Image (cartoon, rainbow, N blue to C red; front, side, top):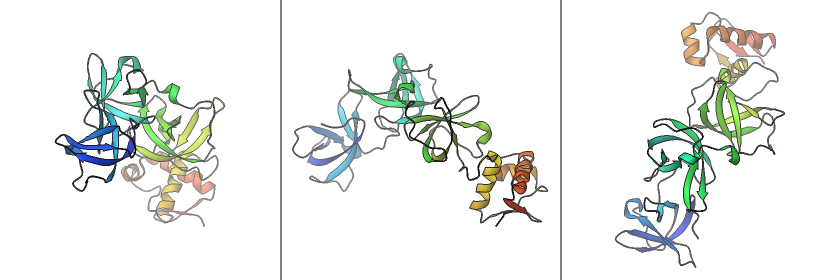
Length: 278
């Protein structure tokens, strides 16, 4: 049996006018890889890894295109169209991914991006996306520790921060005032567990919390210093615009963070900049 919604390693069996038929050794079931997706180097008896899904006529089909999400994964996808049956998402394949109205947490709008989960509907055997992601998140058993490095999927913004999916398993939040670089829905990046609260809600940071109880702005400057051989040519006299461009923070925030780092003896002040203390 083919695994719908996942990559399958199959063998090229025979070339026909519609394309190359693929299958597994010892199994009778075959799937078509249309001509437009056949690599020029593929010949009969070669093995190839393909993604399996259903085409517009609900036939099992193979493709070498790489989808933006696979079965039982989360993704942040943009709505390409909305019609009488639901919303259709761009997931990188020829056939758009449908989100029925019954699976929409709120009515989806064309051009907007939403966090969704891809599952296989058992009745129709179709791949379906849902923005009602809560049932697919782990909330009871949190196998994480504070300061752990984790994989993040950036989702939508809320009033207090940006929602993220952690390790394709948990939901987390990055507070707006702790984001010091441009991030967009759908981005994948590394992050760090900041706090696991009593209700199992998780706060996340994009910067490693190298010093306990330090202000996140100061922590960000520390990370910048470490990435620049321990020195930044910025100080209290630097232009506010330059500080904003280089650090994405106000001059007031910069001066406050530098003062904190200096009091903790983590940096030294030099004539033209700041340096990590030895």
